[in-house]
Picture: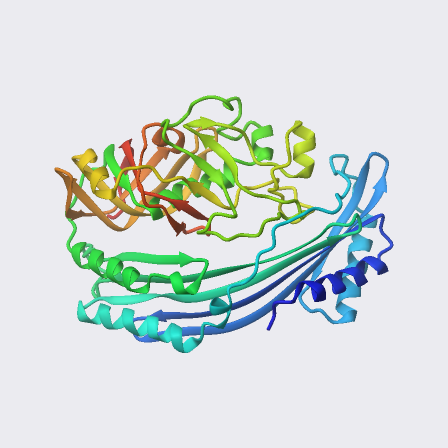
Amino acid sequence: MALLEQDHAFEIADAILAASSADETEVALHCTEDRFVRFAHEGPTQCADRERYELAVRVRYRDGEGFREARASTGTLDDGSLVGALRRAELLAGVAAPDVHAVPLEGAVDVEGTAPSRPTQDHSFKEKAEWVDAALRRCEAESLRGAGIARTTVASRSLVNSAGRRVHGATSRSEFSLTCDHPDAGGGAPLGGQAAASSIRSYVDRVDVEGTIESAVTRAVEGRDPAEIEARPFDVVLMPEAVAALVSQAALAGFGAREFHEGASFLAGRCGERLFDADLIIADDPAHPAFGGLRFDGEGTPRGRTELVREGTALGPVTDAAWARRLGLDNTGHARPQPSSAGPRAEHLVVEEGTASLDELLVTLGDGLLVHHLHYVNLVEPRDLVLTGMTRGGLFRVRGGRADEPVEDLRFTQSLVEALGSAVVGDRAERAASLLGGEVVAPPLLVRGFRFTSRAQG
């Protein structure tokens, strides 16, 4: 097994620290066990059972008011590779320019330990094949093609530095996703009938395989032969996957201290200002049950729940050690592996649940659109988080509070700040992934006047 016990990981790190000539040294060891089956309508297309190590050594030499530092890594743990990574880091640091914003490494901390899920770690290819078989049989029964992935991953991370910091933890992730489409899709007039669903959980026994299959297949069947629709502003209900695609962009370009300092964040000049609906609460929370993330960041700093938006009011950016000192703020524990010029990032965003059920959101909506997924979402303007992209996987017209007609996909250009200003928050949050890899725990949202600008097809 690739995951190392804490004592073994610390033993490897201590040997590197002892061999280092640098003024400060940090060793980070990341171990991963990843097992997955990708499948298409004819069956499995790729299977892998991968064990990986990444050990990174960061060394620092004092130089005036700053540090010359560098990082080198290796994917193997034999003595020669470990020493080689250390010597490369020392060599690179010797010619690096001093960083006057670097802060000294910090010492011992108390961090809540986390362990991998053994059932997730042991989940077999046979068990994944049962998921795949159930999905493809259901697709075949409805004359649909199916494709997707069944995946389980466990990972551990250890960080030890010469100032006395020693932290270790592990995480687990399980996923089943299914995309369905019509066998004749792809040529001529759009047939629709494409839909996707997924279930992402920390523990494999909580993955909702049956619900994922039913959601994808039902929406694919109901979405066949979509009607044309005019592109214009619509009131919409965004399902959790669509919300995740939008809100994850705030993690990439909004909540970090670097973009805040540079004035490229929607938070710049607005902290303490009510920007959103008073019911909206957004936090970064690795300890949320849906995430089960590590309780320390890329510098080994303890981290927990950090509120970013409270009752619609923007509270401030996330920080790491250097940016906290530079801006005179508390260190929120959001460092990436160092050295990094990218700045801190919120990686476990949670949009807190409201009180409205999905049916109540649709009734409140009255007439508009039900949006299940958003695709290829990109940032246009960071100050107001203006985003562009398109709908995907089932767009439905809502009339009188009922989603009763599939319509063709539309492109949008919309400010997220403006959209969340009128949001009504649903009551069932889910961990959902976006195309670019961000994952957000989010409920459905009702948004007024969502700006659709053109048809996505033709």
